[in-house]
Length: 195
Image (cartoon, rainbow, N blue to C red; front, side, top):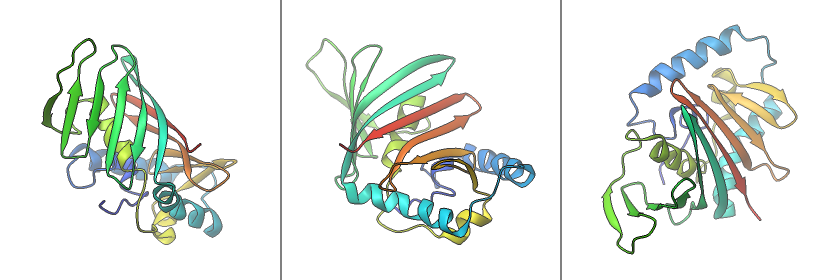
């Protein structure tokens, strides 16, 4: 799995190389961060954020529920296997099953027994964007706390931080438990269950 820098990758829907909207979102987030009155993260907090994605990866897999709000609301529920590099999800509104390895997505429409496959494109829909975000919320390498601080990460209280416009809440084990990502077209909130 490609290295995912929290300070950039999550804010860019975990796709730093393919999202043209990424630079727009990141530039806006930096501008907001430079004018915010919220407290910047301490060295200790930056270190905790830096460790979060490696702790997710070490967990191997997790269940998740995602709420996508973009005009209307849609839910996804499933399992992410960070070591196996795939995400399995069911769309709440119609029961369609999706499985992706980041290259292709297999789709099983509710009420059918025939899977179809197409190239995975995180820019094609909020659902695939969300699946990319979920897949990118783990890393084999620790992020650099200095970069996290220099990119304007702020503490929102408790174990919740904002890094480049993306809110992260860490659980008691230091893993990313909740991600709230805001886009011009809406927002995505992903909650992980490591149980």
